[in-house]
Length: 77
Image 1 (cartoon, rainbow, N blue to C red):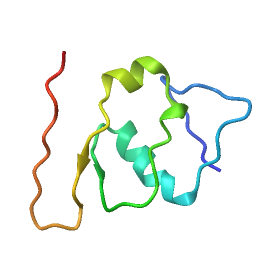
Image 2 (image 1 turned 120 degrees about the vertical axis):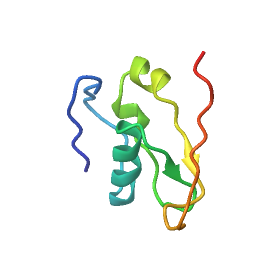
Image 3 (image 1 turned 90 degrees about the vertical axis):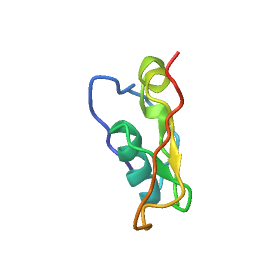
Image 4 (image 1 turned 180 degrees about the vertical axis):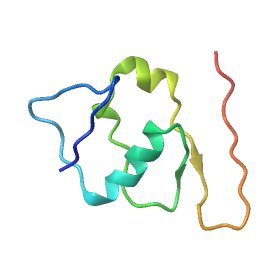
């Protein structure tokens, strides 16, 4: 069970199931940070409205466990 609250959150009567491993990816997405490819779980995009999802690209890095990492974002249209 994941409780999400905020300006761009969409209330749902029967939201899809989430797991404890989905919490960190969802918080990273909501914060505008990339998800790690080696991370379990998924960002619960269905919790946010379409405008927020479109304006905040889902980005990835290889891992957060590296000593150095580079984040590359696609250009905004």
